Image (cartoon, rainbow, N blue to C red):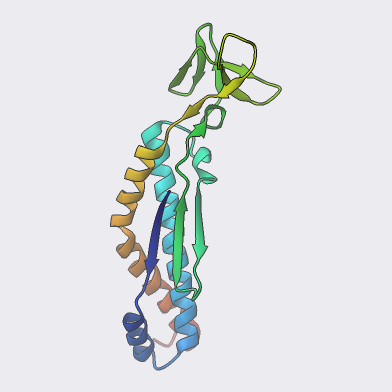
Length: 176
């Protein structure tokens, strides 16, 4: 599991509040929305880059990425689950004579069990037990998260600036 914390420090927030003429409620709302949008963009880009690197459908990564608001609302946490993905979640499985093809990935000696909705391997020579076929995503997702993290500050400043401008526009209308 890899966690990424994106937040503004109190000194920067106080400076912005002072510049806006002591409007802490509006500033707080704008910063909260900006941080939330930046965190969602980081999560989205991480999922997209991981899916591209693994040649899997993007929907497979959706459940693995979450954003959480932290206590004060000016901090967000981007969570990425890095456990292996079940083979049937990365694309449409196709049974062949020697295994199962799912997109560009081949699972040798695996088979599809429609009743349980998955791709499985036999563990021994007997009929049961079975083991779920999985794809390891940890190295690619870790690299994607690090890549997105390098752009985090730019996104944060971009979205916070936009939200502060929006608050000022609501306050002053079109008079600027």
